[in-house]
Image (cartoon, rainbow, N blue to C red; front, side, top):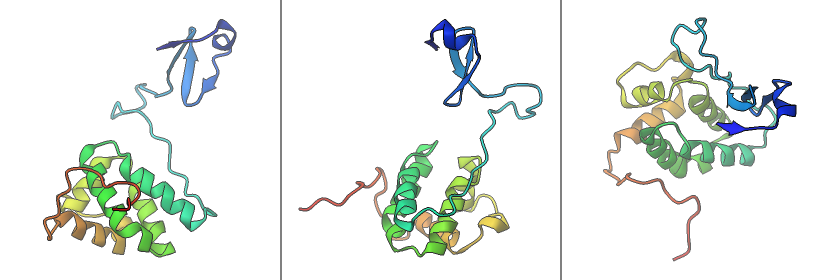
Length: 153
């Protein structure tokens, strides 16, 4: 925990998703009895409506690399490196929803690997392309994330 000045602590302000409590910054997660799964609440994803396509693709490339679990980080980063630049605006929107709407990265992993059925709202052409990518029929080596930018050789 991080100690903060008393002048801020006395107001119990919320600071960047953290709550100030007794002079310390603590996570703002609600571990109360109201949460039956006893998991932190994840804020709902708000879709960015007027985001320029190139900016959206840059954001999605970053988000594909920074996942909560290594498996999805490897799968999504290699998928984004291979397909994101050539996606249409509609496909980019589908990909954005696919990686940002599910609250659990394990769900995305299980859908992609075929362990669980894909919900209708995510059963689209991008998910089908991602599932094919996960099958790795060409036996590509995917033990590390690809470089962000191609380097001249």
